[in-house]
Image 1 (tube, rainbow, N blue to C red):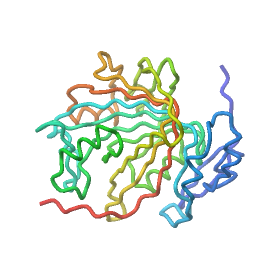
Image 2: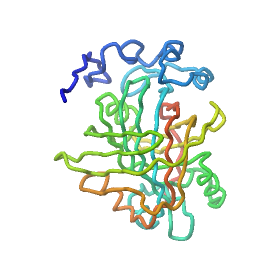
Image 3: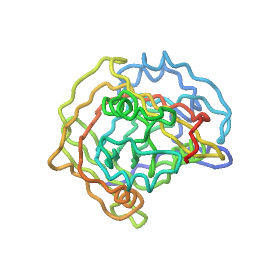
Image 4: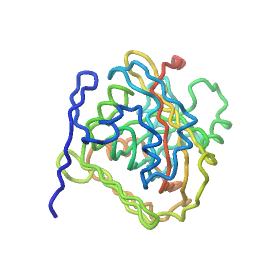
Length: 305
């Protein structure tokens, strides 16, 4: 099958030249997207969630930009696993600590994302990370755990975050401080099946997923909104990045017999192995959702003893 070449335009982001689709949302709006225009896209269920989150123009390491970054139609698949706390702790900065479900046992995750309509156009992404204790919650471990498992608010530290477009890499790495790089990355998610594959440096498989999609439940916009806070060390200081997710259609499978995860060779699989996973706790697949990703802000993280 012949590959369709899409026309692109050059954009400067903090001294980096990236190519974006000509006539795409970023080319036309530079992050200050017209919500009425997005609402006319048949792939988007609605934009009411975003009308309540006005954008603000801010300075950033990649130049002036608008925040939050809006994702109008997206899907993802997440495997949550139990892992040895010592393995997690060995990969965390000393200021952060694993969120434990039992003494010596923490939570880690592998997530695959597909962003069909967003301010920086279509791209895919994968993440390997660990759940961490909120930076300023002292010893309230049980309360932190209940909040995390309920998925209302989770705090995390990301080890791997590959993407498949240059603009996503530059914005994520230079603008947010995340460990992002560009590689071949395919994610396909529908009501029947979920598949994903991340390429390594030689074109082989780094990490991959293939599972039946759990039965989906529909939610009204705004009915189920979860949040994720990610910590990054960038520009000589700790920062926190808030991600708000408006869940529209999602389903879960507890203790899946065959989680469908394949580990090959590469940065993602190496990072996952280093976390010493024990057992897959849950598979969550969201076939439709929306995200507001805020720019990172400086945060206070206690100094380790």
